[in-house]
Length: 419
Image (cartoon, rainbow, N blue to C red; front, side, top):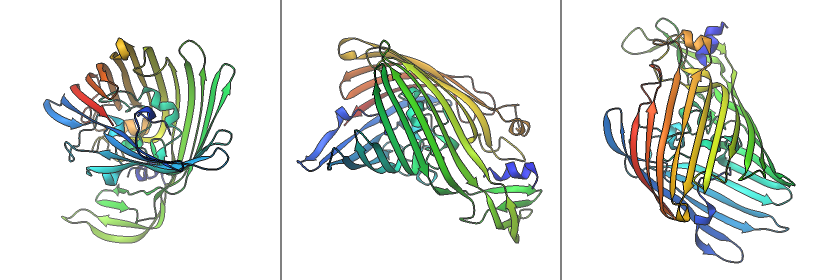
């Protein structure tokens, strides 16, 4: 199989953003604790020349903790994303708003669902849909109220990162363990997932000829992830972390379907076309931060850089002859300064930058010679009390003609209320 067809066929943490201190006990006994947490957030956004009210990354989570023998703590977490304002909205300006492909129009969709077992000596084990170990590093810049998380490789293929394992990983087995050292804390994470989703593809192999992979023949196969981080006791805290995630794309069949598309309706002309274009999707990230934490008293500054292969998607129709999958490199930053009584005032800002690093993809672009997403953010947050915050956020977009259909300047004002 030639290289062009190979590329063409590719087309088609337990780290929680919510502090457990805000969890509301629903039921508690000496055997179990059932609790609920989450938040509702909404904002008015002016972008693409229009002003509309938009859902943020609202979510609700139910958790159960069951103490077991010998210091084991077991339980489960179930978390749903909520679209209460505009369930049909297709404006996605924050990576964390992304859902799995089948959930994109649902008012209520699953974000996480996993079991866990924790032990101070043996570490934390988890099984199910959960934050991938890759996010153990990339979360450090994912703190914007309205946008962000667009360039770290976390929300791969414009989804929640479920099938790739970088974001809210599907069907994942994970183990995490931390050690307290004399000068800080060291933490590692390992992740494994088998088949997570079918890979649907329909590509033009020659003029008026379209190849479709039969259901269940093409899939996201086995994936592995690893992360490591060290938080040093220097000043308010200095962190360094690395992460890598790899998933096998099984794109092969002896029963490929070839359609003649020259007429008004596609006509099947071959149901046994053989092809093998299996490849890999991978992403790697390095991150560092200094400070107590985002929106915590004083200064917090974080930077993430990433390199990836077949982990990003350009807008539909932006390329000819191959798919809109591309190799990329990117970076994100988030900086905040917080002061005042109860740390109620915060200025924050930073950037998201993502560009294609794929000569074959770049050569096939209809317009321009590279994909480039480039946004700079500036915002202010007022923490009214422990559970209510009001924020203003602006994005200054310098994306090129390829990325422009999806990204633009915006001005937003919003409110978030925690459970």
